Amino acid sequence: MGEWCCELRLGGPSWVYPEDVLPNVRRLAGRVQDVEWLVLEVTHGLPGPEVAEGLAALGKAYGHSYTVHLPLDLPLGARDEQARRKAVETAREVIEATQRVQPWAYVLHLEPAPEAPDNAPAAGSEAATDWSPWHERLAESLHVLGAGAGGEPLIAVENVPGYPPEALWPLLDRLDVSLCLDVGHLLRQGRDPRPLLEAHLARTRVIHLHGVEDGRDHRSLASMDQGVLASLLRSIRHRSYRGVVTIECFAAGPFFESWELVEGLWRRLQQGEVEP
Image (cartoon, rainbow, N blue to C red; front, side, top):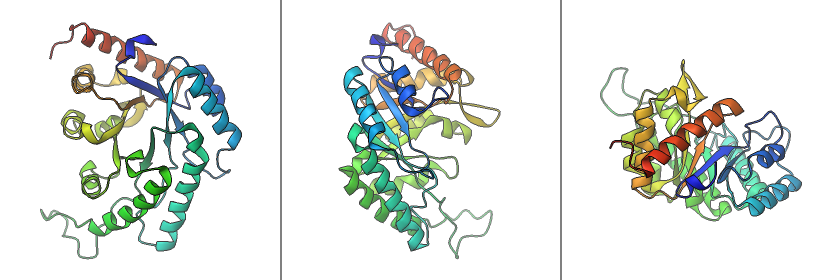
């Protein structure tokens, strides 16, 4: 791990070892180019300033950047206005608490899933469901979050298994938010990630890589078709992608196995040993 990935900003999550965030990042520092700081829930409070200061110091010392994964299941697109406002406020508080590390991106799941409206087409109908009210509510929420983050491009909306990624495209058309393309989530949906990566790489600020095994994601990349993985890396290299690629495995074994696979494929691509 190190110089080989000078053209690839490869990172890992802040939960690789069963320890708190600071010990995890200390153990990863010097190996990764980015750390995904997982702030997936705030039931027990926001990250304290000592954590943010410690992470900022590690980033400065070792040269890695940070992405921040905002809490899961924030109902930013909820019909209920009070719930939506509370979700926005929670997200803003996390953004403020983590700004010390100057994140490359704030990764965000857009919840709840787009609901069928009262006049939705009958089951089996070819008519498209109208998700525009969901988009309207989300656009309002994301505009506020973008202002707090320092600009909408720093907000990276992630495709999730609960609905098709196409539900996100209207938001990308109307806002300046970025995309977090999660390859593992696409595989879990039975989607080929390659055409979506090609089509949306210019708007993609973060890529999440992880495998799917027995219907469960965040597994080692050894479970992914290696031809597909090589194609994704080839596109990243060919297009001179400058965003972050996070190996999103939450245990040391799968994480380092995946890292070695990516490292090996990347070296072979650099040396012209992987067929187009």
